[in-house]
Length: 320
Ligand SMILES: Cc1ncc(COP(=O)(O)O)c(C=O)c1O
Image 1 (tube, rainbow, N blue to C red):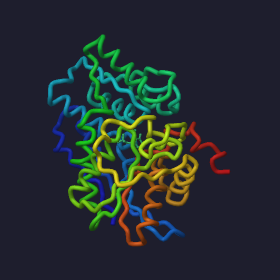
Image 2 (image 1 turned 120 degrees about the horizontal axis):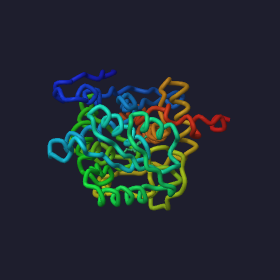
Image 3 (image 1 turned 90 degrees about the vertical axis):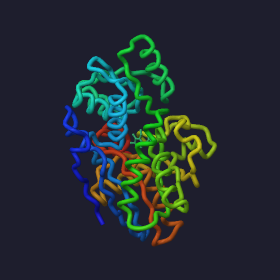
Image 4 (image 1 turned 180 degrees about the vertical axis):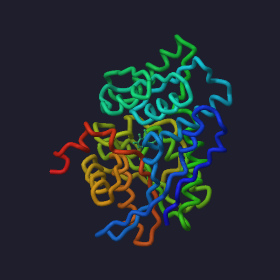
């Protein structure tokens, strides 16, 4: 069964940028059948959001909430620290809605993501350290000195998880025929994992929630964070949004296995997705193998691959 996206423009009214906002969410859920494993994984096609990632949801909801609370004005400047996808999403919606956007990101993030953000007309502030903590500090310092800055605070803003509970999680519940055995997701801010797990557990407490972590940075599994190549997740700390979240198990996926599964999705299924999707599907397949051939395992297909041309995903060495 393939559930098609619906266009519900009326939900977002008729303001500038509303038409673009109406394209976000309501993504299809598709079955991916794996042979020789003999298992089917259900994948939520978040890469079909207009800027190419799951982060369009967060950007839309935070902007709408800030507008409703009178926090965004014509001279506001949306300022966020991000590994890329959130920056691209805010840059896109800022362009459509008419807000200035400034994105703080590590200079290690791929050049494609930087170019996309600048192409939408947003400003970039680069920092040299890895991990998000440095960048978050920079945004806080900038906002202290200029009250035109609006901080979405994706890492601690409860709206991030609430949106996934009220939208993404509900979509999954409508789309999956019958009870869900396992939901698998990696985490960056933790919003997807926290929100979807709450929605799915509320419907069926038996649904197992599995957190996917890079094997090289399995913090929830109690290990030290190290360098991994899975783009967009595991920024070196356990995000506050994951506190108190009911996680039944952690599945570790090595960077190499994540890239191998991403290439399999690209080449055997024609899905042009990035490495966090490969990691999610690898972890989901592992769960389906353990649960049995009729198990219903759902995961997220997070973003598109075109923003990773300069990374290992497109490096021939990964395939040799
Ligand atoms: C490609 C990709 N996958 C997964 C995630 C994780 O999403 P969340 O921030 O909701 O934990 C992100 C977030 O940055 C991402 O960019």
